[in-house]
Image (cartoon, rainbow, N blue to C red; front, side, top):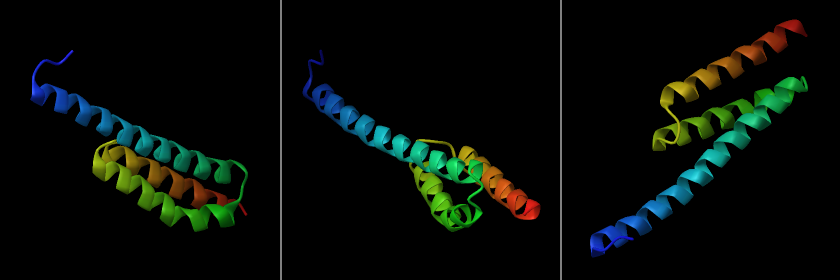
Amino acid sequence: MPNTTSAIKRVRRVQMQTAVNRLRKSKYRSTVKQMTNYIVANKMKEAEDFLPKFHSQLMKIAKTGVIRKETASRKISRVAKSISNLKSKN
């Protein structure tokens, strides 16, 4: 148990930050899952329409430090590549 006033405030702050980070990570995972579902189902039109929002969401989450910017860029790059591969096959 924290005994100083600053430690008590710090505990409250960490709890709030943890809740916010959990929400952001959940949003990140659901965004990636939605895009993956579009690609697996060969829904090229939906995947192409969702790509700018996907990019935006990942970079917003990376900006806050929940995931690294390199991770977000890598995921965006791989998704864009798989969408272009779908295009070339059809």
